[in-house]
Length: 289
Image (cartoon, rainbow, N blue to C red):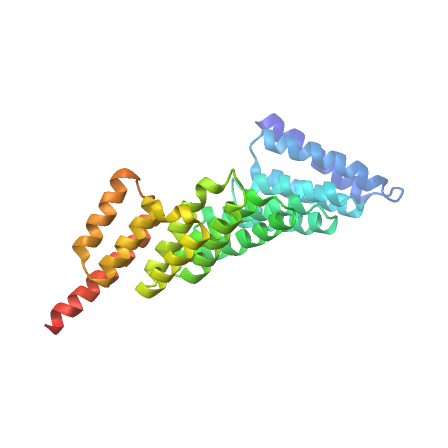
């Protein structure tokens, strides 16, 4: 490890000396870039992540001076991947710089990819609001580049987190839009009932039985096969239990579905919210009688 650090520091000193010395225009930045690259690699081998990250940033600056934006962007990405080990904030900052450069040179699919990576870093920090912002940016860019599958993955993340923040209408619109798109693609058709179920659960969370009834009619028009699915039956039965303010019926319906098709944590969390609202209504009724 010590050897790697010593080599890294030596390369870094030589690079700094090149930058501070006299040289023909461009040549000193090219020479320094080569030395910073070697320095950063040696810091990586020593697992000295902060130093490797800061050295890659110096490398990026050399490439910017040389007007090599693609190489500069890549150096920022390398810096970010080192900083991920020590500082998520620094990693995000470097990826932002990379995205800006990729956008400048029209490499939009690369920009989209790193917007998604920024979103995932915010996700790892449980910063849901910022994760939503960057998953939306990534989705838009992937959509523009016609990378539909990845765009939809990002949109689903937005819908998932929006529902967690009780932004149900936003989630509903995203799930419905993905369902419509998926119907046009024979490979994605099998996922439609899942998207409509998610949208329906968000309708249930709004607590409006008329809204879910109308939604179910709309979904059956959209996809005639939906009416015969267990997902459609689940939503209709829950709507009925809400209309009847029957918590026991709600519990039985959900338990029955879960025994055949286990509900994931997201659906479970949202359905628990529906149940709590239903319980509160039942208690209200009891207090009035």
